[in-house]
Length: 249
Image (cartoon, rainbow, N blue to C red; front, side, top):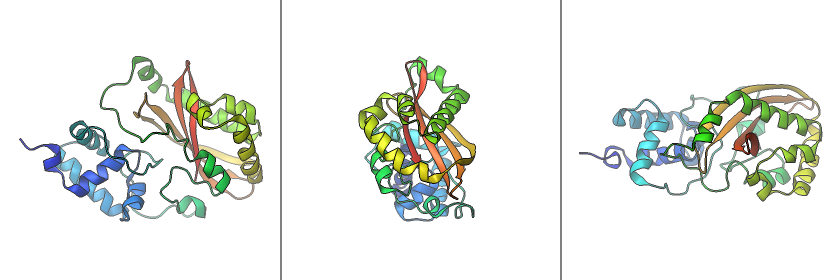
């Protein structure tokens, strides 16, 4: 009987391994130096060969056979396919041109601090086994995670650095002290001015080690003309959603 590795081409397996680490088709295309169309074609071929309906499931099938994937550059996009084409006309230059690193927000100081924060610091892997029971219960509470993410951003909007830091999880605090978080946030957030709009555009459960997290995305506009996507990863800790990482693009 043909195995998954025998069925797929090396290019298809290469693309699925990026999906395992959190890339979508757009970020995979940037990572591989290909067009989004080409990456989507690889994903469609892999799904067809394996008889599955999602790229994530195809990636899981490959992971189940190969074991722990080899390291790749992490992405911070939702798992799976993305439409072909360029970014929407209203987005800023920083949002349409992102290097293949974990976080880019247009300010070097903030990127240095936040680059390691998109849950957790180790390479992202999709768990083939079920998450623990408490996390499975939390996984279904998408609305509560979105409220926690928005409340965190409101604290940042109001320059309440200590309170926003208190709303972060253990991994975030391990990588960043309150002093560092306050100093960098003070340099980056106030120049944006008042937040004009903030719309929820994504709320996804990501089954990544150690116990999965929710990836919440907002599209926000500020008084100084900046428009950016704010991506927050939240982990379920001590009976509440805690911010484990944040990126802006």
